Structures are given as structure tokens and as C-alpha cells.
Image 1 (cartoon, helix red, strand yellow):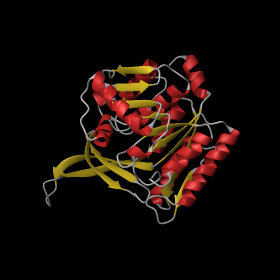
Image 2 (tube, helix red, strand yellow):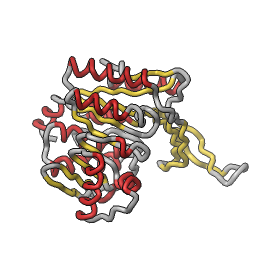
Image 3 (tube, rainbow, N blue to C red):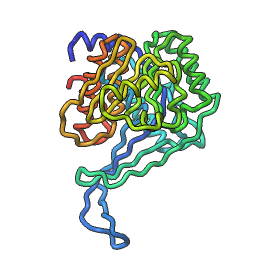
Image 4 (cartoon, one colour):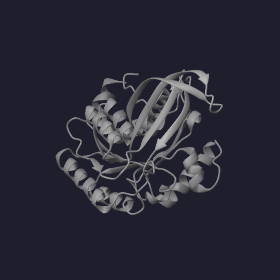
Length: 317
């Protein structure tokens, strides 16, 4: 990454609002099959925790040098304490956007890994929409940040775990637009069509197909048609459709581009989407051309797919 690009990233202030997830890894080895059922028995050797979900998007931005802020909720439980500690390690100056709620479960994804292979994943999660009080706390947090350090953008990172829902999405978008802050969205299925009048909207191909109710063939013409359909409904400025091994398609006001993926040995796709939205958001905020945004997004996704587990992008690489 050029020094000029690094300096531009360091000038940015971006906040991520979204679902906070704790990624737990139980690592061991298999030496036998259970006598109780035809399943492997994993002898646990270690346990690791990493910040996931919106927290991992924030970590990607931090690794790029972006001045990063984070808002979300977690539970008043053991996993919540672990996740809050991990977040405070990378955001020590201001973690006041992290709200702990009594009676709420901290969403946790537990992956059992043996011999570098996922054996099973166990999800322990909450989908309950947060109330008006939490939404107001987040808006007050954004106001305080924006007053002190003018925000270039807010990323709405939706994993359908309750922080963003049909009641508060329009309120948050309206607030951000009136504040003059760019709005970038990484959507999920349920709330897909609620994100109207945002600046950049980034579904993956599967999400876009489900929302549109039809397959999207991998051709420039069909990708353009899909992007136009989304923009007709949502009135967003830029549409980014990520295409896994087929790369990234971007349609903006000034044109379109389709960059094929970087050729890599895929080890693990976990966390690739978080890296892509982080890099694309930073590149968009500094005004890079669409071709360069797509290129950097592909490189970021490729680097993460080449490593095991949920990891953040390495800016130097």
C-alpha cells in the first residue's frame, strides 16, 4: 500500500454500527470415533476468542489506519465480558458505544476445529430487536463523535441479530443524512429493502438474488440489471455486488466496473466479507475511482481467504 494511500486512510473517521459477535475457537485433535454415535471425538487442546461481526469490520478499518469507532450491544454475561475486553484492546480510547444489556445473550459462534478442519459450528445468538432507548444512545454517541471528529461515514453492518431492525433503520438513516455523514450498508436478507437513500449499498450475490427473487447470471449485463433494480427501489448512489470467486461488481453515478477476484489458494472464507466492506468503505471515502475500489476489495478478500479463521486484513500485505 502506497504511503499516500496510508496517509489518506489515516485522515478518515468512520464509525461502525452493527451486531457484535464473539468468535470462539475450540481447537483439538481427533483420535477416535465416539462409541455413543458415529461422530469424531475432539480432544480439546486450546480455546481462542476473536472479535467478530461488526467488531471485526472495525478491526479491519483500524488495521488500515482509519480512526475507527464502534457501536453495538452485547449481553451482561461471560461472553459479553470477553468480547468487550477484546474490543477495548483495539479501541482503548472510546468504547462508550458498546452497550451491555441485562438479560441479553452475547451472540457467540463456536467453531470446533481439528487438524485445521472445521468439525462443527455452534451458534448461541440473540435476534431480539433493541428498544428505542438503545437506538437513542447510539445516536447520541454518533452526535458526540461527529462534534469532536467529523465523521466521514457510518457503516451499518447488519447480521440480523437485532441492533438494526425495521423500526430504527429509517430513523438512523434520516439522522445520518441530516448530519451530512455518508451511509454505507452491508445488508442481510430480512432488512434488505429497508436501507433507502444510502450512499453505498453492498450485498453479496446470494443476498441480491434472494431480495430480487431471481438468479443473477455472471455477466456484465445481468449484473448491471441487478444493480439498477436495487437502485430503483433504494435510491442509493453506489451498488457493490460481491461475487466470491468471480470478484466484485460496482455501479456508481460515474459508471461501472467489474474486477475479477485475485487468484489465491482459498483456505477459509470466514471474515472475507468484513475485510471487503472495510476496505471498500475507506477507499470510497477518500474518493478513489471505482476500478481502484474494486481492486482493493478483491485483494482484501483474497488475503483473508488465504488465512484460517476470522481474521482482519493486513494493511502491509
